[in-house]
Image (cartoon, rainbow, N blue to C red):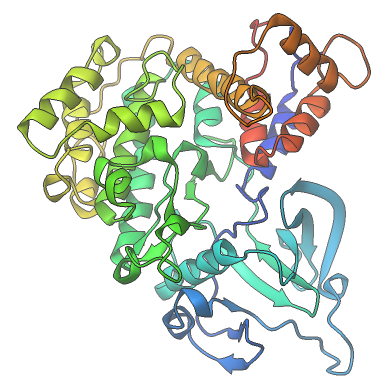
Length: 455
């Protein structure tokens, strides 16, 4: 058994709370109120609406001014929030703390981000800009909320919503085998969130299962939240990048469309391809182009790039994706996957059309339980864990990928096993994954599924 003991429900919830994708300090969740005051990075305090904040563009991302009731006293976060001392996560730029807002007793998560001239904060700035725009008209329940940002001389504080229902795959796994109708409930909320994003002419550019969180473990009130807008971009600059560098919007290759991989340009249609890939994973427990879960992103990218936007491309797509894995799926779910992942982006389903789809509305989704659906999703997580460890360790002196021998694997295990107990605790595994550079949101989902021998 990999872990010394199974994680308790409470421990799983604590891990999931951290998974705001907020464990990586590079990202901000949520929205701001349009009437609040914004502080430009240049240091000029301006009064602006959410729209005018976003109008400043990617380079003019905004923060709210950190103010004190005593204008002569420097801002102190502890004057406004009671910090519990519980660290929800940490990443490249700082830490995330659980806190209580003193004004009304609301529980929040606070990111403490060191301001550095050397730090590349383009991801941070893009996310603030996108979420400011998405806050218009009160925002959306399926978009994670940003409450406020406080800027001091040395530190940026980002106050955001706590999401404690886990990542969508973890949520589905814990409930045992599930049906299409169960998956369609969460997928409908994803569809509503994406439609809201696109209606504001914003492209998420990194939609994937890891960026879909649930607000609660209780199915009766769990709401899906789209998080991580670090690669998001307005549609009018989608192919311009920051300073002309399209690499800023790379996203995750395994969820990218053929045209995104070819041109580097994110688009609304590319977002919809990713939505289709997410649906396939939810229903089959496998990636559309990786049936066995053994491929790296580069392998998947090579396959996707061979899918052309014509009839030949559609045939190739169908031959690869519609295999034995979809045998028990309803015809309507298979048709939806094909429409979302059409090789021709001009024929791909839009977010608006997706909202009205009968399967999404739960009208044609099957009520039959998908056999071993929870186990397949769990295995999907486990493969991600193995792949992450192999990617980090299996390199030679020149950085090239090499195979791992039994001796190599034992050395890796001994390095992680800090107390030499021949078992790995959740704390040891989390520490090791963090050292590998794996984001905390991925740590949480890996730990939740790390009981590899099912005991």
